[in-house]
Length: 168
Image (tube, rainbow, N blue to C red):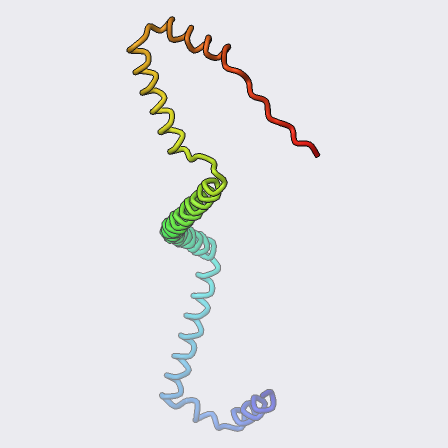
């Protein structure tokens, strides 16, 4: 590159003076100087107003950042609400499955207890209801004190049976 420039400089030096005096060459030279001066002016202006331009760029950047953060927060809240809805649906399905498992377990325990001869809650409630009905009937026929004395007397007179021991 340096060699090319040196060759061009030698050619310019060898050019006759009349070539650069051409009106087209003079116009090109004048335009080149104007471009050079405009560039120098732009550079000078950029240096002088660089601080102001930097501050304006910071303000614009700040506005853009706030706008971007706002959009990001909206997106995050949208995604969060969707995920909450999905999690709620999964929780409901899990709860339904758990309830189903619990009812199956209870049914199997009840079946096992019935096989062992243990009365169910339904049976016990029916017996309690029957006892209440019978107590009401007995209470209506005899006075309460007489009924209590009769029950106590019967309890005293009833012989206690002892289980016979088996001889081993």
